[in-house]
Length: 623
Image (tube, rainbow, N blue to C red):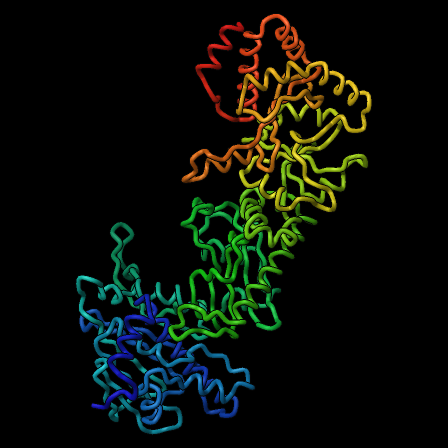
């Protein structure tokens, strides 16, 4: 019995129990090693015409004996290789080979020499039968784990390596027997190693009709056939000219378990600081949990066709988290377990490149396929809005052109660029109005005057919309302004003069109403911004009424956020004239009017009534 050349038990325990978090990946590791061994022999074939080219990896299992066998016809190992590669944990022959031939384009994934030992997660004994190409002797390496290993001469037909895993017995924590099935093994190959460039074969059982059996009572028998389990060439590795839209749609639906075609597909081969192939998709619909904390964004990450991560979050910013797809690169620095990436410049370079690619594709959609972009924005626009607002608006400049809001004029979504291009010359601000729905916003008192003057209003119905406007502050030199804060008498000297005169005339009435309502409002003023409505509320400070509602609706909010509210009375409405009459004849009744108008203004803004009893009694008395 030979001892491992490292702190055997401690290191092996660490690799089995800490480095790897998913027992299923043992097969991925062994197949990747087999692929590397074939790569080495294929590389040798460039200078040796005697090398055969029928490369493949074979998988088999024996349920009774509880064994799984993975066999390749690659380069194989001699005694020295076994001692070096399997006798020393974390010694990688592949890494050495790659360094020796780094100028010849050799691409391999097995760079650490620990993947082989992941098999001890599922096996209590491993046997390796191997014969190196061009040599006569074959060897058997055997180990039951950290206690050590043996190397002996043996007989073997053909070059390459055969690994036999003796699967552990089931225990309370894990059912190892699950691996001893056609379905499980073929599923693991499909999931992790589907794009290994050599065929991975296994005998599979099929039910076929017995020859000569009658049509009335057909008889069937179980037949085993050798099948290739992997597709070998991924869609993203094929020339673009060979990939149809139908191919991309089918790949998307199969890979991401969606019954609908993607809204948009992006096929790209990127060359630069880091080379990679990518397939990106925009889904038709947002997943049910997309806007919840449980949703996990990310792209499938491959290295030379071997899946490294199911969802690599570092490749996508949150605001593009709705993108699905795959990235395959041979330039990645993998960590020792090949399960997660080291935070290296390669990862950052790919992420940066992907962000630019996605941004470029979205810009193209806005310019040439607006209908598709609108569909995308209706599903995922909130993510882009949060991207503008988050981190104190750090990304507002790069994302502002992708925003869309509902237009009062066009009655559909428009970009900020669309809005600014069609502004009248005398319009200085971008007007918006907030509410729970487009229908409710359209009925706000302040909207009437704005639309009468021919202004286009952006309807903000998402909670984040006004916060986005505050962060942006302006677009193309035009400031954002809520219609409730706008002064639509500007430029109309006659209206301004009339308002000044009436405000002076109603000075005592306004003071009385303000005194009646107390600290519920900051001020009471006359307004020329209303048409048919007698009253409305507007905010006087940095926090708008809509912001108050949003902030107080958040978890753990205690309703302490208050906007400074100003009660606006329509200077030209009959109700306002009635208030003046009541001030002179019945101040007690005027108090009732003040309460009713204030509560109605709150209801119009989507706020609850402050004091239901007071409001009901006041309204009843007036009626």
